[in-house]
Length: 256
Image 1 (cartoon, helix red, strand yellow):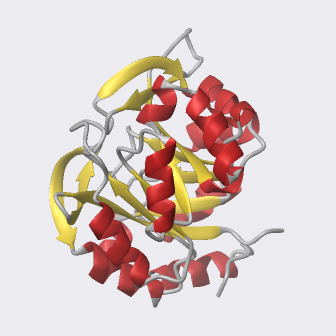
Image 2: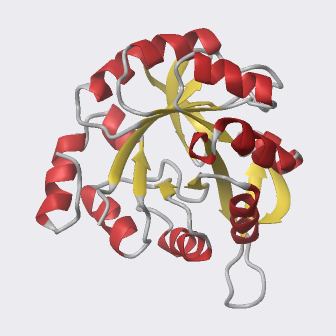
């Protein structure tokens, strides 16, 4: 069995790492370069950097900050936010990113997934899905895809969009439950499992981690390949090695 990955996330706004609840009420958590350096030495398996307002503000990602973060990392580094074309993907890969995360631009132009994976390899192309529960038929949950930093609904069904992204050549899915984001109440297991069962891609679960038990649950019941968290790591509530030791004690393969 492949080792499960533990991934801290840097949500960046105006050059600072921030964290909110359900994409709102953001509070500053620290400097992205300092936090990246900390996670580099803390046995994180990868790092995700998301410029969370770039798409909504219709501007380019903060390349200079990405370069500074990449300089302190040897672990795989995924970057997202405001990426709209092949040129921007190329620029980020040259700036030190190993993978890029597409959301808004991919929803608006799904062919971008195909051409990007053909040009740079599917292993570089992560599709971020920000999903909010939107009940459909009675007793049957449905999740809607949101774009522009979670500010705009699309009407797209998250499961169908994940399957389409896979067909277009995506290499991985970063799945965030907007309902659970920042709550520290646990991941949306039903959503995560539904996506994992629908595609044959690695799925990173995001939104809701508050304790090592939540991460164990998203691996065992949610079937996720990786767990992303922010609050519990930034605030040192549960350091990465504490989480990994807990998971290992429960039989989950992790890189120690």
